[in-house]
Image 1: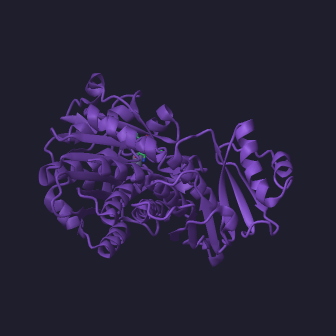
Image 2: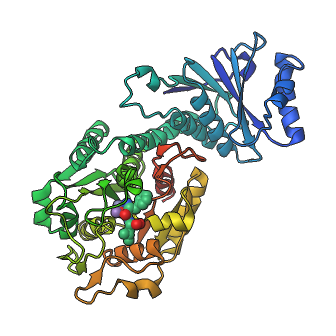
Image 3: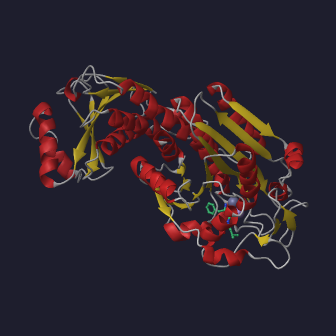
Length: 488
Ligand code: BES
Ligand code: MN
Ligand code: ZN
């Protein structure tokens, strides 16, 4: 999408459609609508708004024809509720505009306040709001989205606004890349094609991308990842993308769970739980999205994305409950339930990353447990770390980006539930605290690295749009990860 900046005001804009933020609350609403009627004529908006029950509440929109009174043919009134935060408002208006404007060739948006942060947020909202997943639609008009937008009311000489547009676009495009990967069906997106997609995007951005095949993974000794792969007819992959700017002071390694399909393995899932399990590589998608965004933004931080990818299937060679495997770290692990595969894949990748990359921070994204949805609902991710400073920085970053996290404890009391009678560890705990015991299992493989685990099983993929999450793959975690990196 082409986004440009203009000094003009909404009533003079010649774009096909112009979006205007409208607050809720009787007097504020009336004043905002009055301001528009001053251009479009008394009685041209308020009666319609009242008929349509348009109250300015968050995310509500009303599209009205300007009937020649304003230069633009359509006005899009966007409810912003009672938020006062300028970037939040800008995001909402940009997002609503791109969602509503499909056939229109040009669109414009008026922001209540023009700062680099709000211009960035509007751009992010525009590019994210224009996202549609249409790769498999025969009707190609289904993919039509807004091609260009203008941000209005930008006085000449405010510095940093062009860079702000670029930043907003970079974040949203990277999240959209992640969404595409998550939405792509599992017959086409498998570990091999995921690695190809990562390589192709890395090449575009001038990044190094190393891909390991099965033989190489065997040589490295990642037996837990290989155990999960045994039931699949498709080879596993480990994908490592590096963004390394000159003079970086910090090194952050993101690790992603890349299960391109999770049938549950021999402990097979019921059909209803299996149907969306193409989303089980969403952690990998977000991890890749973050490193690509960091490169687009030229952040002064070294960023790595390391992804462990396989299917979890039921083939004749499938791993079994009762099997014991020796992890790369050295601990032996007794398999109890083959559907708890993600932690096995991550364990070996985390060990490798700790040993070979020696990160300042290591952060994994994983659609790890259904228990996380039970605990926090479908729209919020669990955040685990022993580092209070890292937790608070990340929670703050999430807040600003409209992505919901909640810190849960790495409760050492539950560690005993991972004891095995025949091996060093079993990979699941008891009936309760399932998201926590999964995190505790991972902790066994990170040594003393400053590490954080994000269980994104809920918000990575949703069955209807909610807040900043579009239906289907959401790219959850990309925006927050980038914001965190910028704060380092
Ligand atoms: N990929 C699932 C977790 C999941 C559930 C992701 C719902 C997205 C939506 C994971 O591999 C899994 O199956 N976990 C099991 C663990 C259990 C067997 C200990 C679960 O949560 O049921
Ligand atoms: Mn599973
Ligand atoms: Zn899984």
